[in-house]
Image (tube, rainbow, N blue to C red; front, side, top):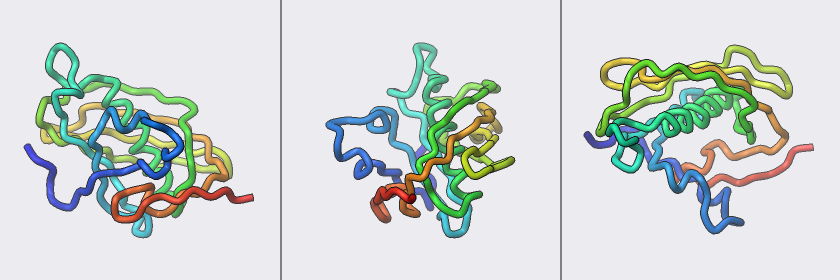
Length: 162
């Protein structure tokens, strides 16, 4: 399988210019579609060999990583703006294997947001249905990101709001 039309590679590199390497360089590529302005950003990825466990299916850590980042984007959609939102807590349920070559899409929604905390839930869905579900809590910080989160369409700029 190849990447479906309408998806572009997510690129956080400018946010990590102060580092020689960073985590997201090792797990991707991860793709994005939609926009923050329309509140419909989603993340997805094609399961590749380097993402698989010894059984030849997508490693649970990879699934949880994409859920973590994808549900942060769902929170940003709800807030109408992007901030640095580190995860505080997560619960995951694995429902089915992510097969090599599958394209999995993170579907998420914010169930509640306060000034400093966001509550989200969602799932990664493949061609045969949900692979993993999860819910999490995010800290909403005062670090503002640009609307593209560093997507290749426009590199992220980080600024601090008071």
